[in-house]
Length: 459
Image 1: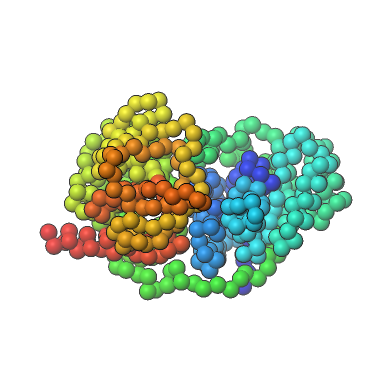
Image 2: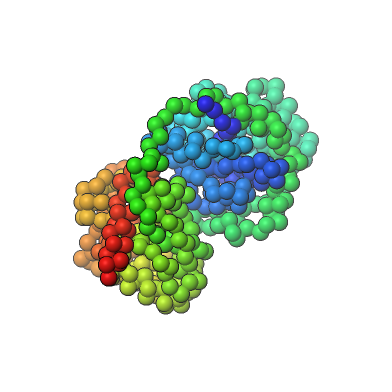
């Protein structure tokens, strides 16, 4: 069994991986090909760009959060029927969670899934030295197949020809083409990374798509994808029939304020019986009919005034929490459920108020990285003592009462952190979890929703 797939990896962060993947996805989609995009690691913003470019929801493949068999299952499941599975790496090709090995890296994913790599090299202010870079990456670990290279920020056709000649004379890596220097296709940045995809102008994507079509040999790229080795055998347990739990509606916050979700999390909930019902804490006056609420991350600090002004939505969510409806909130969702947010310009805005205290935006990164830990009480994650793992990335901090009863203990390296807020059937935390890492979390959430549904039907 095999399917056409490639991983687009960089020499470092900022090399142009996202730009290249967007351009390839858009150009091939315009040819009528079915392109499924993926992002290595826990990132939420890059997948938004890929989804716009391909017209399909992007998926995350995180070998730190997800064990090998479920990771391979997710990759294969979303690739079925596609003409190309296009994966963006994370940071540099070999950059993982530690300096001792490449766990969590694009190289690790390439090795696990037997997927060829196309390397993106930022060639600005380089000529023959680019060949040394390509040679080094291709020879560093022979178990990773660096099959092609795309050169970014090329100054002229002559510049490209010089580098192409150098690479071809010193390596066996195929030179697939280049992206010229063009500020109109640069992606803007914000404190969590790139600015979200819907803030990108469509002409920028159209320009990028044309540049890729004109300057990259997409037919050769597809040949590399089609040359992928046989896909590894793996168990397929995530979407087995016995995971169906019953039909229940889950309201999921989806708007400019809240939009950080793993698509596979939503798919797993759907498989377990959930009907995903999107709603907007910004625009809707009340919650849709549902038996549970899921509020993901995003940028509530940038829309805090609008969130505050939607009194009826805030009151509806607070009432549902007091009645015992299951509510699961991650990062930005936590920020929304506390009393107040202090915005970047120092203004306090009232939020839902399930939890006392406020969240303040800082000028430095507060937390970043993978964590593991345990629940300190019974929560939506399950009973006290449940092992958990996930990823944190935030610039804000929560300030609560001195007697705050924490719901989670998280460990990152040698550091333990008390975290997470719980009230009745509400759990809010900075921790982002992937349900494929532990299906029992999703099962516990859906079970709580079903219990609420039964109770509501009896009233």
